[in-house]
Image (cartoon, rainbow, N blue to C red; front, side, top):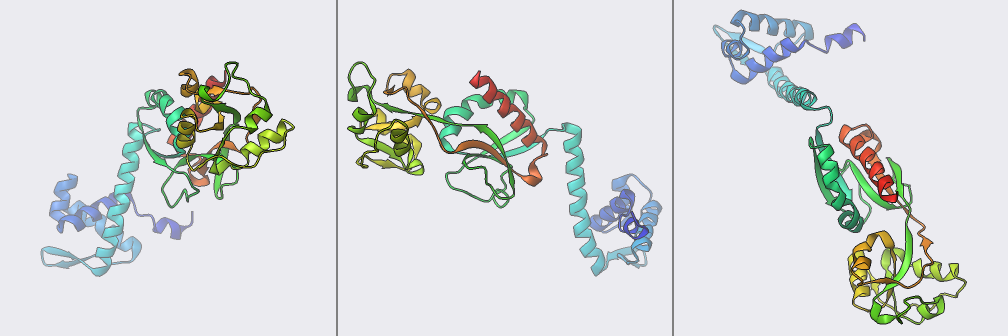
Length: 300
């Protein structure tokens, strides 16, 4: 650090004395607040003025008044000291404490993540998690989001994508649509109304081609959200191609059944995305570590 750079970094005692005097409008009141003598406050402020070469107070008889430069400097220094105090309190309280603003997709959020979040909260009670629901791409920095669970390619600008899991989809429908053996050939499935999720419009074509069958013409309903296509399948409106792990409750209740054991891996994957500047933010590190372990345990 050069001597000029050191000159621009006054001591904390100088800044604390200046801040107190600027707020109270009195060297005596500042001395009382900081448990110092009035003379000590005067010396600290004089040293600050000499170091920076700026007059911050006009001395008029036994009173002092901020100059224009003093008023401007006081506002900036007061904010800076508040930031330092908050950071120090956070470090004293816990090295991990803070907020985690997490953007999640509605389906994986409500059906997979939220039921497991009590485990994370129990391990990290000092972290406050704030959830933001997102369906479309957004700006992590502009929206103040520390991390997001993203489905798609690993190509988020200005962020690092940590792979979480791939996705296998299977054809499912209501038991009312199929014979008792529950298993349908690809040609049998092609005869049913096929429900399509708008964000995965090519899923059925991929599944049929993987089974060596020409994809049928689209003649089923299209849905924007997972929750609607799942309820439509339960209602018997057609067959849907869905990730098995996201419809576990419907399968367990017998509302949906898997009508073909042939699964296909989706083209996209799930990632935890975080801005590069937030990669080492303690709550993000803690959540990333916990999430990867939770996924490993779930797979096992």
